[in-house]
Amino acid sequence: MRVAVLGAGYAGLTLARKLEQTLPNSVSLVVVDEQTEHLVQHELHRVVRRPSLANEITVDLHEVLDCEIRQARVTDVDPDAGVATLDGAETLSYDVGAVCLGAQTAFYDLPGVRDHATPLKRLDDAREIRERFLELGDGDRVIVGGAGLSGVQVAGELAEMREDSDIEVLLLEQEDAVAPAFPASFQSAVHDALVDAGVTVRTGTGVAEANADAVTLGDGTDLSMDQFVWTGGIEGSPALDADRPVVRADLRLGESTFAVGDAARVVDSDGEAVPSSAAAAIREARVAADNIGTLVEQSQGSHGEFQPRLTQYQFNVPGWLVSVGDDAVAKVGPSVLTGRAALALKTTVGAGYLGTVGAVQNAVDLVSEELDLNDVEAEHE
Ligand SMILES: Cc1cc2nc3c(=O)[nH]c(=O)nc-3n(C[C@H](O)[C@H](O)[C@H](O)COP(=O)(O)OP(=O)(O)OC[C@H]3O[C@@H](n4cnc5c(N)ncnc54)[C@H](O)[C@@H]3O)c2cc1C
Image (cartoon, rainbow, N blue to C red):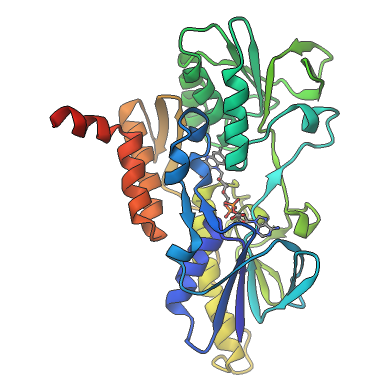
């Protein structure tokens, strides 16, 4: 019997590690990813300002997984048949599987945006954003389109990188608030942190199109720009025809297949839409691991003729955290923290995650680099 995990991001890696511990030895587990390294995407914006962080936020999959790892691009999935197509040619059949392929940047067919903007999804994007920004000078303007988690955080990094120059960092958001998918108290604290960092924030302002020198807004106004970063939204994996299918709280996408993380639009057991986030992907993966285990047991006859009861995912994260340059905003329960305490918390959460997926050295290095512990150690020597 074969269980397949397609994608080794937050959802896939968390799921695969759980399954390694829980599946019977008779079941073979295969993980497929187009990369050989897991990327800690929620720290990707940091690489724009501090390229050396790339080492801490990439984890060799062979170091943290014991199962079979296939490096291949998943080009199609048939969730009912339990078949994935790899690299457009080979088929991989599985008895139970999970689609954890994440999402890709959505350009919504806005004319010129794909051609003139840099997205922020992979390390190469972060490096390109950095290189282009370093070519700017006084009076230039960088526009960041979209103020979700990635847009807010990259705008904060760019604002810090200006040092004494008067480059404008302009963050545009078509909704009426930054971080639109999140609670109001978090939104207003993030807005204040952006303004304090020197970011110009315009909400209720959608991008309609772009050319090499300007972005045209929904109301027809042209805004000149010298660099354009696009963080305006996500769409599904090409393997799912760019769709993010809706899955209910049992995360079941088909007879033998689950969908976890950004790959799907998850509706939880309270009927609430779950915001796409690393925090949710990790927690969904734990539910998917339970449910995959249940289907494996069923196929081995443990549940007789009865349909087994699957675990339901309820969205419940302890809080939300973003960095805004050298500052950070943390919403923990009803409280909102900012400043060094929030930044330390963010680093600790990132390191905690790395520790959970077995990347302990990366965790130590991340904490040292983010909290400048190397400098502290050097000062004490
Ligand atoms: C700059 C930035 C900052 C963010 N900040 C936060 C934050 O502060 N907090 C938070 O909770 N979330 C944050 N997010 C969102 C978070 O990173 C995503 O929600 C999260 O990565 C989703 O996890 P996932 O496992 O579903 O997908 P991913 O982490 O994207 O993993 C998908 C995996 O599938 C692989 N893959 C993709 N397509 C294929 C294919 N066709 N074939 C084979 N393999 C494939 C990829 O290589 C990858 O390993 C941020 C995102 C960005 C970009």
